[in-house]
Length: 83
Image 1 (tube, rainbow, N blue to C red):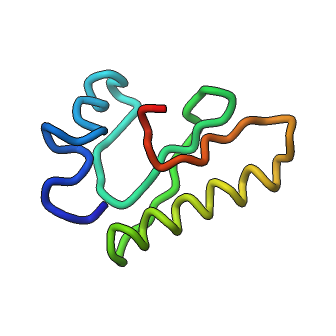
Image 2: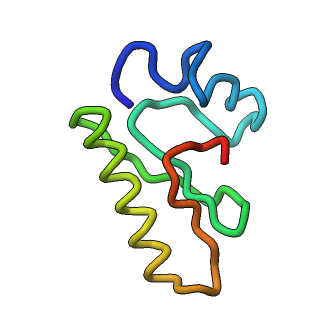
C-alpha cells in the first residue's frame, strides 16, 4: 500500500476512483474502504508497515467488523476494492 506504483497509480486497481466518486473519496495510501451491503460507509486507515502488513491489518479490521455485525450485514472483507 505504501509504495511507488501502488493502487492509485495509472495501472493500479484504485486508479480513477476519486473521479468515479467525486467528493466522496480521497486518495491516501494505507487504507481500505468500509463497504457494508454494497455501500461505502467509511474507511479503515492503516499505514507504517510493509504493504503486506498494512493489507493484513486492514483486512483483519474488516473481518472484525463483519464478526461484530453478524450475518445481518455483508461487509466486504477483500482487499481488492474493485469487487
